[in-house]
Amino acid sequence: MTVLIAGAGIGGLSLGLSLHQLGIKFQIFEAVSEMRPLGVGINVQPHAIRELFELGLEAELDAVGLRTEEVGYFSAQGGEIWREPRGALAGYNWPQYSIHRGEMQMLLLRALTERAGEACITMGAAASVANETEAGITATLTNRATGDKIGEAEGSVFVAADGINSISRAGLYPDEGAAHWGGIMMWRGTTRGPKFLTGRSMAMAGRKDCKFVCYPIHDYGDGTCLINWIADRSMPEDYSWREQDWNREGVLDDFLPAFKDWSFDWLDVPATIRASGDIFEYPMVDRNPLPRWSHSRMTLLGDAAHAMYPIGSNGASQAILDARVLARELRDKGQTADALEAYEAERREKVNALVLANRGDGPDKVLDVVAERAPEGFADISEVMSLSELEGAAAGYKKLAGMDVETLNTRSSIIEV
Image 1: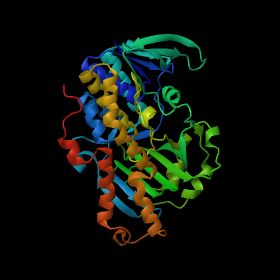
Image 2 (image 1 turned 90 degrees about the vertical axis):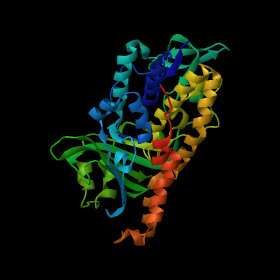
Image 3 (image 1 turned 135 degrees about the vertical axis):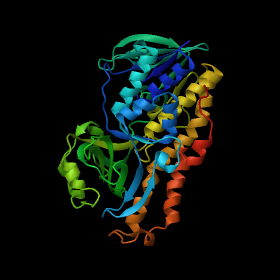
Image 4 (image 1 turned 90 degrees about the horizontal axis):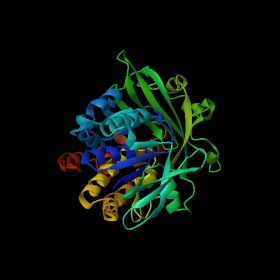
C-alpha cells in the first residue's frame, strides 16, 4: 500500500525522503501546478539539520545556505544584551543554517525526485480525505484553481502536510476559523549590504511590539552579503489583516518611521530597509494547539498540525522532526492507525508547548524584559539583567524545543538505518 501525502512543502518533502530511505511506498500531491522558490529566509536548527544530514543532504545545504555562527539580542538603542554561539561553535555535532525557505524547498524537491523519480509527486492536485475503511483510505484530488474534482487516490494512510490553511485540518475542525493573529504585522525583505557582527550572525533588536530581525542568507565573497530582514510592528486590534493578501507589497511609510533612529555601530537598520528590493507585508499568525492530530488512518504534520509564530527558528525544524518520527513509526508499526497514534503521542504535546511558548515571545522575551527595565538603554547589561537570567532564558527554550546540546548530541538517531 501507499502513504498518501498532501503538500510538497518542507514537511511533506522531508517525509517523502524519509519514507524512500526506508523503502516505504508513498505519493505526494501538491496543489500548485509548478514549484517555485517562494518565501523568505528561515533558520533551521541543529536538531533538524541532524535529520537532513542523516538523509545525506549536507553538501546540498552548504550549496544554498550559510552555517549560522551566533545569535545576538540587542536593545532598541543597539546595546548588546546577549550573544551566544550557534551550531558547531556552541558544541553541537551539527550546524544551524540560515537559508532561503524556497531554496531549501527546492533542494528537498530535487533530492527527492532524483532518488524516487519525478512520478512520486503529482502537481496541480490538492488532496483531501474522502473516505476510509479498515484496510485503507481514499483521497479526493481537486484542482484548487477551479474547484473541480480531478480524480481519486487510494492508500494505506493519509498525511496532511498542506500548511497553515490545511484543507484536512479545516475538515476535522470546521469551527476553528481563521488563523490566530496576535496583533503583530511583519514587513520582510532582502538587502545586499556589508557583513555585520561575525558575518554569519543572526541578530534581534528592540522589543515585541517594535522589533528588527536580520541574518545573512548568502555570502558574495566581497565583504557583502544578502541580508534577510524582518521588521515587526504591533498594530491596533481593528487592523484588517484578514482582508489582505499575505504576499501584499509592503509600504515603507507604514513601518520605517518606527526604525528611523536605529543606526547602530554594527548595522544601519533604516539604510538596510531602504536598500531592499521587494518588501512584503505578512501578519504574524499561528494556530491554536489541537487536542488531536490523528483520526484513524489520517494525521496532520508540520504547519497543518502546529503552525507557530516565527520566533525561535523552529517552524521548519519541527516539521522535519515530525516527518522523521512519523516515518519511523510507519516502518515499525506498519502503515496503520497505530503508527499514526504513536507518532502523535511522541510529538503533539511537545510541539503544542512550543506553539504557546512562541506566543509568549519564546527566547526573544529577553528583549521585552530589558526594554521594560531600561527603556532608554543601558551602559552595562549586568545592571539590567543578570547573566544567570540570560543563560536561563536561552537554556530553557532550547530544552523545550528539544535542542539542548547534551540531549541532542547523546540521543540515538530517530531513524536507525
